[in-house]
Image (cartoon, rainbow, N blue to C red):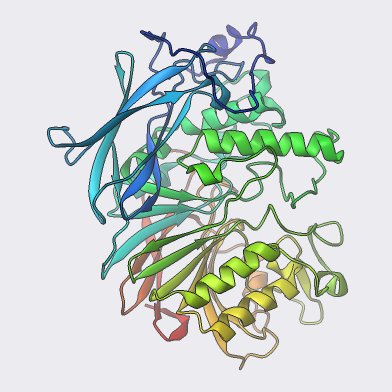
Length: 531
């Protein structure tokens, strides 16, 4: 893929205002009878997601000119019929299902085919055809109805211009049932003239912060062109939820934060327009089901997926329904009264009840919460006389955290475990009923994963990590690392094991992979043990 400035500037005359958004969201006209494309329409590869026992959602987006500056991906304002096919083998000699769907300009010619009628716990292969062009082959796996073992990886925070996605290349070689992505799939900041560490010349439109539908489409396009990311999507079904950078840093429900470019998103109408553009493009570029398709600036991302009697996966959205951060956001001391106000919420009333009631009723051995930002209390200042809190994390919503942990405890939820992203560092923590009392009961275990690339090259520890792990500062924290990577979780009825995989560098390609720590949790015994 040629991403040179000459190629991009050659398209500079294209209109940036021609994306039609019909009220119904779909074109009703006749499909393009015999489409022929100027380039590979499947430049973004294929993906699958949200597996259930009898099916998955299959995704692709037609884009023969994927970085076209008008955001259309080189596609005309015409409907295209796209054929899909599922088989039991990679050569498609044993076909299972096939059908046709429509790629419409209103959704950037993306395809979200929800396939049902498959067998549970089975591997399948799938592909698409548009005109004469055939997509790469993807592999997916349905959820089991009965199993004694399940393995998934989780990742987050993949800033394109701060590192290479080598971790995904390694992940694609794992034996996984699924991948869970916890947010910050892309970053809204300006990429820069040379694409950061990627050292790729980009058009000026990529150098500004994203605000419009076209901006977000092209930022997703830039991200999705990465071959390593495509490999991981093609190898496994993904379950995704967003955090903040898919829209704007540290946004909170109906509240925008101050943009780095100073544009007036504080205006409520402008903010909702920006959210609507970001939400739509997130849906357009990822394997999400119809219930997750946004309605303007509103979307329901929280949902629950079951994997037999072994796992209930509760996918959270801690951005869309939260109160605004207190004290102007950030990390600072002296905000205890504001952050502990009893009415404050990070999940919203509906999602909070949905989560606690669902976890309390669950018969699965493991209840895993796919969560965005750290739940564990963290005193971020090593001075024992100063308590400094991260106000964007659950530390800025202490009453909501108390309701969550007390609710899981009182309902007797089976073996709650939290997987977390956002913080660009790996942390293992015990979640207790009272963080001020080191003898308080442990309710759950939290495994926070590091970023995949955000923050550039990491290290085993840094100044922040040293403060977090200072003697007596946070006795419930069991381990910390500032290196980049992803985490692999193995589940059986006897144990949940988390392997922290690390890529020692990301600012240049070709890093190896090391497992730097392994922890396990035993059923009925919350709290992580170092293996």
